[in-house]
Image (cartoon, rainbow, N blue to C red; front, top):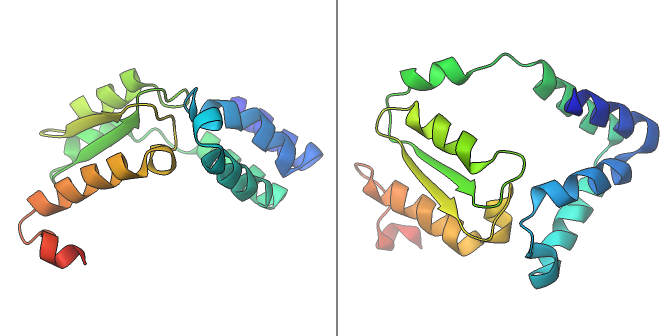
Length: 145
């Protein structure tokens, strides 16, 4: 319902209105004050999107089938990353999804919301590189350059 309402808002009021609704939910509580450049980058990225494209994407997410039952069929190394302050996908959901995947590792990035890769890029990149380095034939420090 929320996504359908946001899609309607995009069509009626434009990208800026959707951005104003979503920004508080996307970022951790201190990001806007402590990292205003991150909030501004995200705001600009969102506001420059075509309202119809936003509406279509929201409706596609609203109408998609629940794929959670497929999680138990995953048989590859998995790292599930969440923001400790994610209001859209709370840590309890992230943990539940990771627990459904055999052998999955779950990590939460502190002082991050739904866009942890933008809010805490060093922590996010370290987790990703650690995962890739642990894979057979994975990235080594020499291959990172």
